[in-house]
Amino acid sequence: MLRWAVTFLVIALIAALFGFGGIAGASAGIAQILFFVFIVLFVISLLARAVNGRS
Image (cartoon, rainbow, N blue to C red; front, side, top):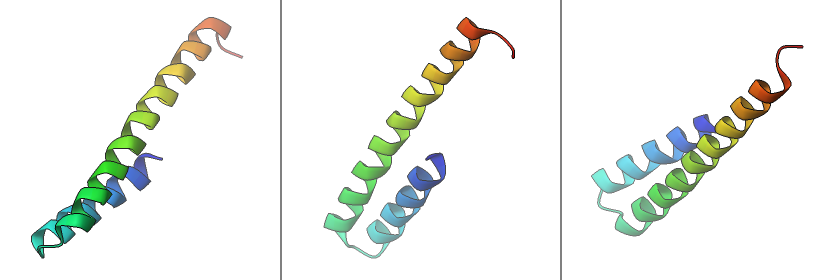
């Protein structure tokens, strides 16, 4: 999921460079949402690993 967030961030930067403001804004928004979802899932997995311990 982090790879998708970085991909959309790169698309947003390239679109902004060429002056496509709408596409850049949408891509940046998608990248931000995906990044926060990644962070939440990562924290949940860390907490689950800490509670369950090593298997």
